[in-house]
Image 1 (cartoon, helix red, strand yellow):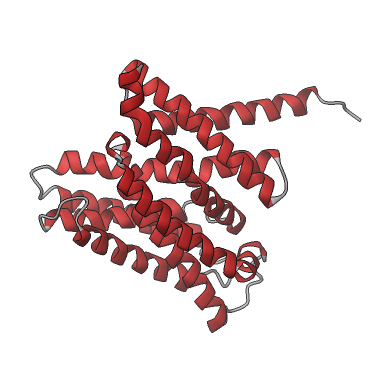
Image 2 (cartoon, helix red, strand yellow):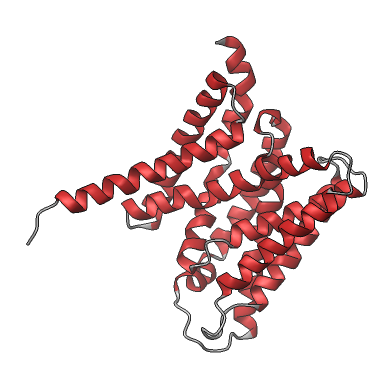
Length: 277
């Protein structure tokens, strides 16, 4: 038990502390109706990492973060400029295109690397067990700054996320706040993808937010409940990965998915067995 505690301590701390901001951003994404923008940005960040790997940089070199961040900011600009002004081409379609192209480009780049398969696996599922205290501390510091920016500009961000698209052309002011939202989002994704990988990052962003969105109404309650769900699923996934010798990141993703399945099934049964009028 002592050995398991030593192995899982810092990954568990990371999964307890770091998902908070991800869940908050996930609630914004759900409200905007662009669910896969986080997956696309995560994949764009991973594409920057692939470029750095091809240039013989290590995963935790500062050059890797620069490449990953630069690609993510380009993605943020693309999503800002494609903000829907009508319904001819949904933005979700463009987001899907960005994801597919970024994923394919990453495969092409890593095919030139002798360790391409291993690097591809890391970009997808990360290596949660290798997380160290300094990485957690730096990430918490950056997340605190991003969270402060969201608090200071909460009115503008909330207005953009909650106001329905009316088909009017966005003004320069709207474009600026939209870009700032995506840029801050990109900073978070750039850092967290290096720790969690694309799949776990997407799962933490969306699954707890969807679960809480199904169960409670207010933003504060959704945020709190989403964090609880993330903590419980992370703990269950880590226990399963240790007991069954499974990849930790993938186990947490599956645990989150099972949690959503249980909540969805429970709500469906309650509707079927509820009073009929």
